[in-house]
Image (cartoon, rainbow, N blue to C red; front, side, top):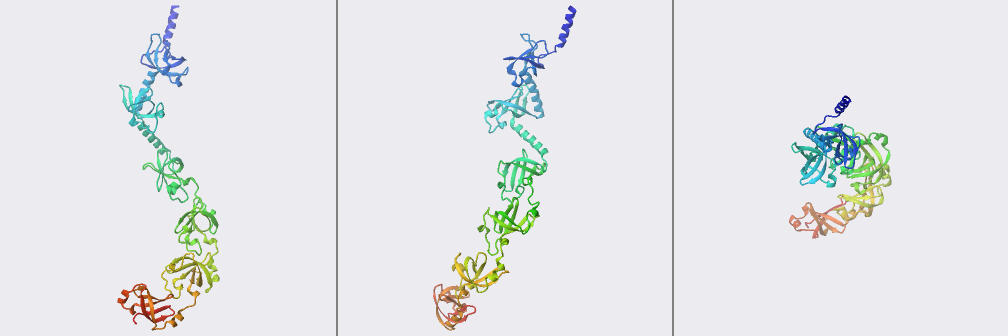
Length: 513
């Protein structure tokens, strides 16, 4: 009987683990009470651990955890265990290892103190100086008891204390994300990004740690004046990786490449001679750009706007957004240019101009504009002719046509000639009256003395008024220089007729009486 008992005791003792104080061992939760947890570590007695040393996730019967042995047998005959000490010791070992390797650790700010925060890192209390926190813009509520990543920048083995940096952790995380992004980026791939900055030549896009440049020419198949027409700061957009150079850190991006090139099958969509409708999108001195569809624009040159009207400023005839019908003249796929015309949709009025306005025809017109050498007169809604300055009056010397007429003024004129090939119509105003010069030649024979009024003084003579409708010229050789120097407009001057040229419509005078 004694021998059997001895054997049983020996087997029991062998089944019990050999444990030492200060050791960390595995233990299994066998019972959960209000304030304490009963833990089996495979020893002859079980241990009791305060419930406050456990997280909610760990409070599960049967779960195995690590415990620190405080004593083999306490006053109640049970093994003394500590969950907190096991966590701190194991956490410290991990902290030292992570610090040596430069790895990041997770922790929770648990208290704000002077100069920074106290951080719980694996049960170890660390200090985060405010200068290394990078919590700008966050409230204490968003900081305390929330998990962040930190970098250990100093370890005190004697005190088991650490100093942390959230700023360096953030920087390292960005660098790691940037490195990973460089590995993931592929030419031709579509990558999400955020518009970070806008310039005149494009937009910088944050791809998640790597910035790329989206040039204005790669934003849209349509012509745009500024990147802000397509993107705005903070926009989330998907872009295509066009090119990349990790060594220089440059990434070229495209937005229009996500969509088919509208010029690819341009010949099948638009044919020369076809009529199409479009919207005016740009107006320049040399013509009007018309958008036929997104990415396809054509130019109506000023010479293709009207058969007859002189178009000096297309902005007076068109406005951005106007819908117009045009005819396709030419298509240059390689240069991405389409020439359009408005006037080709109308009959060319010059084809019938000679028949419509034979020489000698009297017509009504309206003054449209002036030049130094004449007056432009609109004959109808299409054709325009010009009255040369020499055909305004038989007798008056006209210096500036606009002094005699007003824009929009109605007037009757005579058609002198029509040049359809060069698109010119010569008109006359004086031809409405008989030529008075044969009568003038008879009325003012040579040697006739006249009382005249000075109108203008030039290097070649003095122009004088003979009557309200007639002027003559006192030749410079027929008047003393001293006398000319004393004259001014409005002065009276006696002169005699020395020549009348009816064909040239001129009267030559002399002041040497």
